[in-house]
Image (cartoon, rainbow, N blue to C red; front, side, top):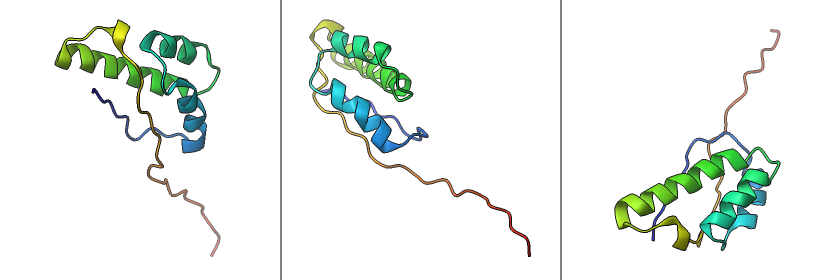
Length: 89
């Protein structure tokens, strides 16, 4: 089992989950096709994560991309950026 994690991606978790639900349980090639064709902004960071997981699999375990499957994918909430709102005194 190989893992890759993406941190500090400024995006709504719900918008990323919409894409993650489509690729969970699919093969590597099928996942790449889905992520390249979907029109959502979350696809590009997830595509980079899938590429990273495939590179980790080939480097650490010596496996090829043809037999890779996305078995587990999850998105969690990250940090919240506090917005500065200037006010009159």
